[in-house]
Length: 286
Image (cartoon, rainbow, N blue to C red; front, side, top):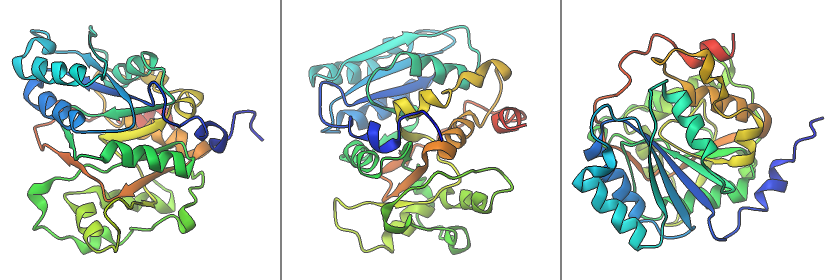
């Protein structure tokens, strides 16, 4: 038995307050994409949230870009605190995410990539799901809408809702039975899955995942209890899969789920992590 608080205990804290969610955005040299991401946040209503941006841009500060600065002003005018924090030298995404986690204090933290646009109401949907399910995290698989006409039924076969909406802890590795679910999040697969479900306008459904990327809302206490991204010091600056490693840790103790419909759109910009030779999961779960 663990001495940590159960998911149900910390979930009771996820009620409207001064700040329910800290939105954490790692970025580097992506001013245009970041401005779109911030525009999506400006279209959200409840719950109350703050935004913290870790800027590792190699040249000018990203907050000085006119489009980014304009959206920061919009968010602040709405009463949403925004911080743009220069964070150099570059030590890799795991370290950047761990730094952002250390700058947070809200009961829930949303790790949002700088190339993801959220449709209106998506933050409220994620927060409602996390509060209701009482698991360690929920996420919205980012959808590449250029693939809307590319239907892949063989990749959506692993879709499986959590029975009764009860999310259980689950050990996930490459040899685990559920690892094949990773295909669910290719292209626009989740958009096709959602189109085949009979869900009301504000309804959502929790489903089983292998992992999620780009838009993940954690119960902060659960992520911290599992070490956050503290494994960053074991990784070279060029690595990938740090989000997967953190999720697998949380899933094993507290459980995690995706929710559909997603409402998170990938901007399909070129990756800023071209070198993927080192996967964090290979190092963390040796």
